[in-house]
Image (cartoon, rainbow, N blue to C red; front, side, top):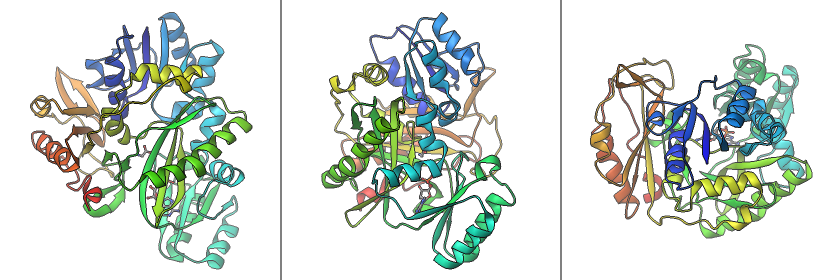
Amino acid sequence: MNVLIIGGGGREHAIAYKVKQSIRVKRIFCTPGNAGIFKICEPVPVRADDYSGLAKFAAENNIGLTIVGPEVPLCAGIVNEFHNRNLQIFGPDKKGAQLEGSKVFAKQFMEKYGIPTADFECFTDQEKALAYIDRKGAPLVVKADGLAAGKGVIVCKTNEEAKKAVKLIMEDKAFGEAGKQLLIEDMLYGEEASILALTDGKTIVALEPSQDHKAVYDDDQGPNTGGMGAYSPAPVVTPGIMEKVNRKVLQPALEGLKNERMDFHGVLYAGLMIQDGKINVLEFNVRFGDPETQAVLSRLKTDFVDLCLATAKGTLNSIELKWDARPAVCVVTASGGYPGKYHKHLPISGIENAEENKDVFVFHSGTDLRHGEVVTNGGRVLGVTALGNDLSDAIEKVYEAVEKIHFDQMHFRWDIGAKALK
Ligand code: AMP
Ligand code: GLY
């Protein structure tokens, strides 16, 4: 069978790496890809955002499974295009993707199906939003409704900050159309964790829990990024918490997917806040997390293609998940200036050196090949990932590997996984 992967980040490199391990697979294609991905996959002569063109390519090239990484194609309806041609694809349809594409839709879904989440109110009118802030009082979290590449969430400690956030979204239109609607929700406290669950619309099964590190600097300081590192498992998700996640989040969400007639064959990712044994959902995503996937899939022993195909075909209940008990830690090395402005096309050295340890994998995020040389091509550049006998061992191995890699102005967090050691 041939497999097509859509996307070009660290998540997709990890997906390609797992697909490559499957004995069922002949050829693997990817678009738009990156330097690491193209060591495993063949390029596709179709633009990554030409969804009907990609479906045509899949039909003509014997693609038995397409796996979609990012949210943008899912929200645009790539799955609908593929289903129109009777092609197997991993991901929700356009309607299901609204759980990520519209925060208002997701909150109303949570409310309707009794999924625990912060109290909230939705607004299309700026004056009403500002009046609500006066009435309710900070701390509050202001969120643009639509996709904003992870930047549309503003955590506000004072009323002034919250009002500024509303103006930024509605008046200055900082996130364009994504800010036509916004929601204001209560601030939650605690520790965050990511639950990536697979569902075929009939069965829902959680993968091993993980934790992301969103802030750019150590100790969760500085602005939010796409994610500076992750580890799995996340001990904050105890067996008791996992039981609650299943009962209060995943099962009700599955009921909702069925009830709302969503064609959902992919990942439902619940971003959780956990405090004193209580859980709340911060957000739903409809795809694998990045960089959580690099850590989680490094531990997966079940054939990944079997798993994705069963999810796409609706036979997920027949699959048994097997895990490597060893923890995995992924450290993202980023470009100088990220998450603000940064330079591209800087040469990267030391990747092969770092991978000499058989428990280390360097997943490429923002890289490109120029004149045969691997260069930077994004804010998040590499996801250096290591398995260890225990978490301390994984942390030691991953930083040993990171220190062998170099590009000009490279930066990374030194405390990935540290929370779990406490
Ligand atoms: P989201 O995209 O909704 O996950 O929000 C991005 C980040 O903002 C989350 O990972 C949290 O760190 C933070 N956040 C979102 N909603 C809340 C909330 N209600 N209370 C506290 N922090 C939040
Ligand atoms: N790591 C956060 C996300 O994938 O949205």
